[in-house]
Image (cartoon, rainbow, N blue to C red; front, side, top):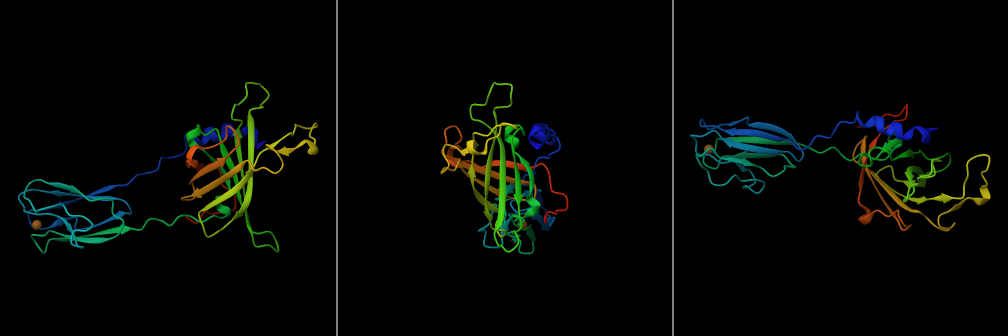
Length: 265
Ligand SMILES: [Cu+2]
């Protein structure tokens, strides 16, 4: 049933997903009365600070590591502006002409990448594909008397050539399974593709085989997560029509979460 409703589900969620916010710029003004306002700013990792000279004062803005992090250049009374490079660590700054004219920039550390765990289980879709393709992911705890954490990923995809038949024959699913390390944010899983199966009552288990033969993998899938709702997938397959040139990562977003699980971020 899931397969039948998945495209509708994937399309529905698109309108609910907000875009991610980018880096911000915070403005600090160098004033004629020998102050910076605000003198203490807090930014997020990767944000920039834009210094603006209000005029009538002879100022610059230099980081307290002798300008190694940023330096607006020679002090000037013009209405200059200077934007720092993206900042990744907290640092003080000052005006080289007026030693009492100081300030601080506090940089909030970037959140640690999320680690793999059951809370990432659910359905995930590929926004770049119009939401019409996606994965069902499971991150399992070890089975009784075992220690391996097993991840499953089923890619609800389509055959490379698709199908113009009106029997659903262009649909396809790629199955992957393997161990994952719960202390990392990424996992690579071996994947297989099966052929020979038929809809009930004509299913013949003896006719089912891997593509192109029973010793073959379809390829590998690699999932990497940046937070509870965002990640990437890349894949590598040597089967005709399936390769992803340069193994380019493709963004995935969460569609569903498993009841009873709570993401740590
Ligand atoms: Cu100054």
